[in-house]
Every structure is written in C-alpha cells, then in structure tokens.
Image (cartoon, rainbow over all chains, first blue to last red; front, side, top):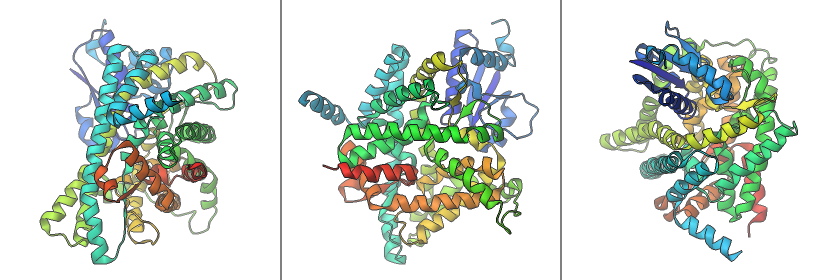
Length: 99
Length: 424
C-alpha cells in the first residue's frame, strides 16, 4: 500500500486537480493499492510521517527522506509532459510496476 | 427578446444550487468531459455551493446578534457582515457565469495568438473573483451583459498583471513556465513589484529582518485556522458581554467557519475539476507549444516559510483595524483565510523578508477594508444575494453583506462603481 500525499496551500484547487489526474491514470493502468490524499502544507508535521511519496504544488522546504516531487506540471503541462511526470510519480509505487 | 428574458427569469427561478448543477453538467458536455463525469460535476459542484451557503448561514446567525451586542456595550458599530469566500457562491451561480467563462476563454485565446499576453488561462478556478465582480454588477444594475463584458475586460487586465509578475514568481517560488492570474493576488503582486524597492531604500526599515522560523515557532498554534477562529470568537463573545455558553458557541462557530468554508469551496472545486480539466486540455492542445506561461492557482505561492509567518502577524492586526478604525463597517473574520494569499503575492518581491511583507500586506489590506466598506459595494453584494434568493434571513431583515475579496480589490471597486452609471 503506497500513500501519495498531494500537498498544496489549503487543499482546494491544486491538490484536487492532482488527485483527479493521478486517479485517472491509476484507473487507466488498473493499479490497485495506492492511496491518494489531499493535504495542506500547514499540517505537514501531521501527514508527513505517513506519506510514502509527496507530490507538492508549492515550494516545499520541510526536511524529509521521502521522495518529494514538484507536481505543478500536472496543472500546467501538456499531455506529454504530464505523462512523464505521472510516470515519475508512479515509479515510486511498487503497485505500479509492470502496469 | 421576451423569450430570452423568460428563459433567464425561469433559470434564475430555479435557485443558485440547481442552476449551478445544470450549468456544470452542460459545460462538461460542451468541453467533452463525457456524460458520467459531467453529471457528477454538476451534482458535486451544487453540493459544494449548498455547503458554502450553509456555513455562511452559521456565520451570519452567530455574528449578527454578537455585533449587535458589541454595538450596545462598546459602541463598536459594524452593520455589515463579512462573507469571505462565501461570495464565491455568487460568482458561480449568477446567470451570466457561463458567458464569463466562454468569453474569457475566447478572448484569452485571441490575445495569446496575437501575442498580447503570454498567460494562457487554464486555471478555471481563478475566474471566481471576476465572476463575483460580474455577479454584483448584475445585482446592482440588473444588466447581465454589462456584468459579462466587465468581467472579461477585468480578466484581460489580470492577464497583463500576471505577465508583469510572472518572472519573479517563477524564480522565487521555483515554478518555471507558470503565471498566476488571480485577482487581488495579481494586483497586489504587481504593486509589490513597484513598492518593495522603495521599502528597501528607507533607512531604518531596509535592514529590519525577522526569521520566519522563529515567528512560526512562537505563534505557530495561532496560525492554525481552527485555533485562531476559536480565539477570535471567544474574544468577541467576551467583548459582547456573552455568558460562558454564548462565548463557547461563538468561539466554535468561528472556528467552524474558518475550517469549513475552505472545505466547502474545496467540494465546489472538486465538482469543477472534470470541466476545468477538459478546458485546460482543450487550451493546451492548441497553444501548448507556444512560448507561454500557463495559469496556475495562486496557492502555489504559499510554500515559502515567510508567507504564513507574515500572515500570522497580519491577521490580528487586520481584526483590530476593522474593529477600531472609523469608517470600516464590518469585522474582518471570514476573509482572514485570504490573507496568506496576499502575503504569498508579496514575498517574491520582499525576497522573503517578513517585516517588509507585513508592512506591504497592511498597506494593501487596510485600504481594501475601506473600499469594501463603501455603500456601493455592500449594496451590490446584498442586492445580488437578494436576486439569487440566498441569505434570506439577513437580507430580509435589512442586513447588509460584503467581502473585501473581491469587493475591496481596487480594480473590482472601480468597475462596480462605474457600473452604477448603467443603473436603470
């Protein structure tokens, strides 16, 4: 079970867009066992310990040994760039191997 | 013409929640989001809107008596209620909302093609401020087309401001290729670009520094919305002469408002995502290979530690100013949630200096409160609520509502006041 935390300012817009795009990709590849969670930067101390991968839509300066990926391209990138980013994010999820 | 008038009247008669469900289902179908997604989009968006109005009713139900008691005990007269982000509901449910969306997308495409702007407006959500401006113009004047036209013109101005601020935002927030066309964030970002160098030239001010980490460490818990809300509510309840139960209720209602209002806006946004995604893809497929800046949400500016550290300082000062400065006719409570965004717009120009960010934020937020206090703005918001048939308790009892974002944002204020020339 991999938990991807999508972090933005107040979990209204950017992380909602990110969850929508990632869940579409997960559904398309028929992957199971990945949890997507919208989180806010202000609560990072609370959710960071349970995150396996962090996708951030803002400058993320918290110290962590978890993979932190800039997710802005999910909002601003064309289909090709977005797909590359989705592949990068899912490469951290064992559930996505061979799918 | 009668047919169109009847159609618009019948549509408005459905009420804002039902209207929004229909609008987003249809928009989803138009932009190719598919039947299932479009239908879900309409329903979830409408649920979000209904949730916003529920929270707003709690705010007004708690605050109108409290402000009345404050007025009797301390002579602090605040006859207008701050609705904060609750007014986003007006923007997405007024009858010209689709016209603003289609008009802005069309004009943006032409202007990008003509290279008049580099900002490709793919961030659907950021249209809400312009939508609210259009809605209150309609509420004030009854002129639907005037609202749509002014909103599109407004969005063109915001595109240019987003161009003007893009480079510094990209560098400071480490977000290459993006622009942030977002009402007061763009306006105050542009003003900060001009004013921050002046601050850095003033002896005594230029060298003052404050560590964001230290400020957050000391004031951290008060920067969390539920705690901040509870403290504000308790202080107001105490000042209003409430007994313990009343103080607790007002404290928890205020915390509820600051937590649930953004959440309800989030539900509204969740409903919009499929439509917004379809619009974004449609635009990027056609213009993605150009040298452009793609519009993203202003929340991307909230990451730098100086943003929340500054906001924690600005929020209580804003409350005190709204309570005690003469001429400000509402207590800023619901709109506090917008202050971090204002600080986010400034930090790229103050280079993360908390002291300078606070000074600039106060230089913007205080005039904003005065502008939102002017009679035209409260009149326009209240008339719009009345026309949409929401907040009947407040409007029916002669109460007035306002919101500094966008009512006190200078360009919105000018447009709404100009629109009075068209009152029939």
